[in-house]
Image (tube, rainbow, N blue to C red):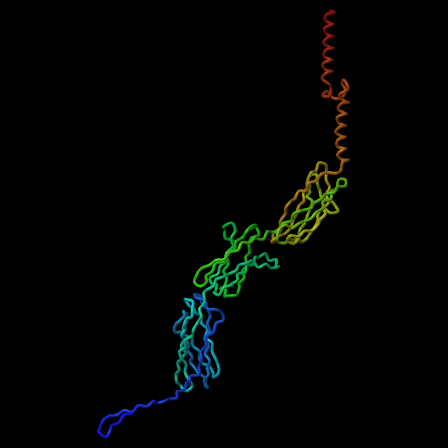
Length: 385
């Protein structure tokens, strides 16, 4: 207060004045995340606006002012009813770890036609990035022939630009692209590796996380195609008939179907009833089925060829396995020897005659004797004359 004294001088009176100011802005902003915010990793951040006013607010505008890297800093909502809320979703990247300030601004229009603006600053905890991924073969019971790989994100950062490559003998067999993998989640990818690849296959997953490139590898023995081999084979003989018994074993790790085992029809060997061929059917991986075959053989047979036909990995395979055989029919062997001896004795009998049999059978000694006698006879006749 200012005034003049009676003498015309100026005076000033100062007193404190107390004013009651009411905050009519009942709109609140909050921040939340579903995962840790790791430095260098783009993380979903939720900014929620709650309308605590008695009336609807319109033209609600949320703007990220500073503190984080955001692709779209400004987002708008048409209206928020009294007591309602609206969540603004952002993907934010904080460059460094520590407690960082995030400043946002909210602007809206009130029911009276006025404009209200509020600025909020949040303390955001940014943690150190942890990059950890696990790659493994996901074994299933299906018979599709596919190899399924599972890539799991055990860290706190996203795995981006994911690519999985299958290699064998330094050659790329196949390459698959995989969607981004968020923390504590996993993705599956299938590989159709050719059944001709029997050996080690290396799977390598490459990806980026927190702005850097990483890779994770796994070596796995490839699926070996089903293969039927005859094992524990035995033979029994009765006259000219031989029974071959054993097991048709699948030594691969994929199933075989339509397995058929047959005695090969060759010179000296032929399939015969009751079981010249034997249909086994299906043999699962690392399993076996028994069989019995019958064949008719001739003499001097040392091995029996068995044809094996089956289907594996949608391909029909035919191969021949030879079974070692030693004849137990000794009567046949004796007959063969006696026929040879009989021939020798006949030859000796023919040679005993002087002129009997063919000329080729006459002994050279008798020829010499005859010529000598003729020579003596001629010489005696000449002397007589």
